[in-house]
Structures are given as structure tokens and as C-alpha cells.
Length: 89
Image (cartoon, rainbow, N blue to C red; front, side, top):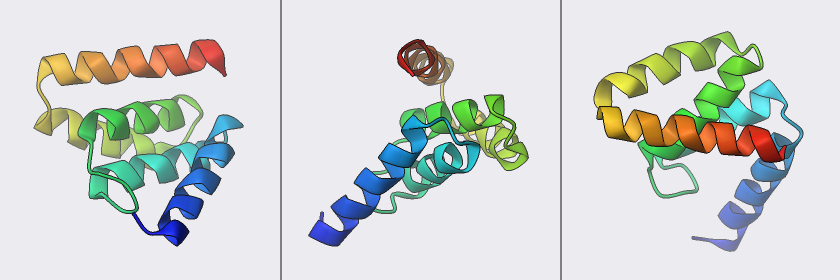
């Protein structure tokens, strides 16, 4: 990953730590498209789930779409990761 891409990802992750819905949604987009990161639907679902919990309407739609492409085990893994994130942030 290029240095600039890594800096952008770190900035996005720092913004997401505040729990800002748009920052959480942005991370979901990055992981579901593979922009600046390796594509990972489980992690994308986690970020969309958190953004949706914070009121981001678009995240609700993205989360649903991703869930249709994922196994039940993957969805459960993403939900567990979201709960763990909530417990620490």
C-alpha cells in the first residue's frame, strides 16, 4: 500500500474512533470496495453496522446488501466485531 494510501486510512480510522456516523460509513465503503485496503466484506459490514447504529441511513442499505452476499457465519462474525468495537469505544 502506498504511503499516501496508508495515511488516508489512518486518518479515516482516527475519525471513526470518535463514532462519527460518516467516518464509520467511509470505512465501510473502503472495505467493501477495496479502496486503500484489502477488500473485506466482514469488516465492511462491521463498519456499516456501526454507522447504521449511529443513524447513517445509507449504511443501513449497504449493510443489507452486503449481508445478502455473505454467509451467516460471516454476518455473525461482523456483528461480533461491531459489538466488540462498541465495548471499547
